Image 1 (spheres, helix red, strand yellow):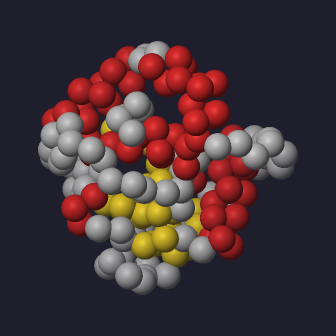
Image 2: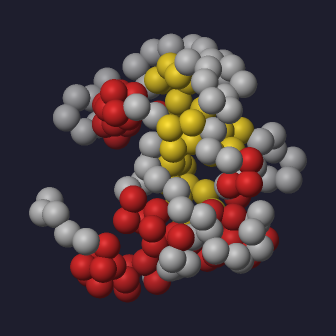
Amino acid sequence: MKHENFVEWLKRNELSLKCKPRTQRASYTEFFEGEFKGEKVPEFKRGEIYFAKLTNSAKTRPFLIYQNDYLNKACTEDIYHTVVVLPLSGQILGGDYRIFIKKRDLMSKDSEIVATAIGIISTGKIIFSKGLVTKLTENEMKKVDEAVMKVLGVNIAI
């Protein structure tokens, strides 16, 4: 992929970002009901971990921001309201699809990123006010990418 700036990327993708399938429409609504109630979402980056609460009855848990930074910027520019994430679990189970992350920064315990649970959440579900939990290293992100590629059957399956 050639190097381009956000404006060029947005010009090419703006219509597809405005197309709102049911999940996008729900995320748009949740954005106005979430922590910031429709206010500007703060800047966030791929590889950062934030707390989120998916439902009123769900517990607050950390999620890795997995989508690219142009989609993240579209969220902060109020163009897009959905984020591709991977949850973290405090249950250490190992295996090919879980990436161990040692306790650090705002993490309360050692955890694993669960690559088999790729999902999307509304920016309104992310609790930015609790701050950045931690940021993955380049090596950790490489391990996440490898696990996700295995989950999706890209290159090396199983």
